[in-house]
Length: 281
Image (cartoon, rainbow, N blue to C red; front, side, top):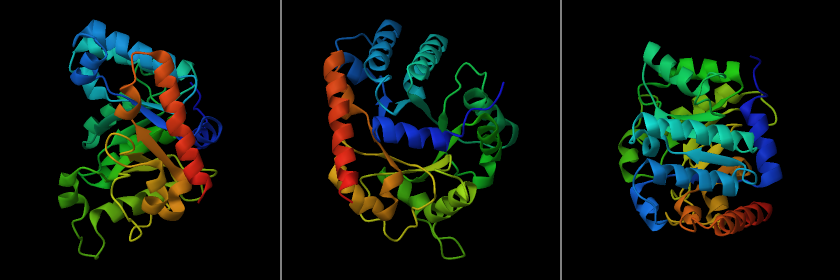
């Protein structure tokens, strides 16, 4: 099966045409309850189907959180497979938020699960953890290139605990987060219009001017909405690299369900606010 056009090129076009917005599909128990759904397979299926129906034909990216499906076992994974298939068929790019990270043949198996073109869970991109060493991601990098998929590597995350690893200073004076950004810049060198290997960088982190965020790749930025960041904050956090930021909103949109119209209106508001904020830079 032939490879897709590289993820970076497809993402750039989707953000330009549909707006720079990624919406999470996060069916955790409290959201299911808020929607009047049971914390069971029926509730999971209804939730996921509704989000895909409401948004997959209009937002650039949908990002299912794999853990919230996996907790239901094989039936939950079946719902995830269907959600990915239907979201991609409707035109959304799918970033699988699985944060996989391992070594050798195990990392290769994770890559095949999500990045092999004919895999049931094939996604346009996958979140991965590099904290067994960036080189441990090589099987995922290679398969992503082969398939036309992408990766989002945890670099500067918004959770407070992340700092003890990501801000640790190496012998060469650079901290670990900056090192990961450097690796990604190397992966994306020479790619146009955008590289396929992105970083996860929290929108709630404040001034990041001490980091070189211009990795010629996308920056997946959680934190808009319920976590407190706003579209107006993006330029101050990301500086010149803001043009490649893909803000992620989950609860800020999903809390408007199960009403399909309300979900669409919320996503459109966020997309317009982000587009306007970026246009003002």
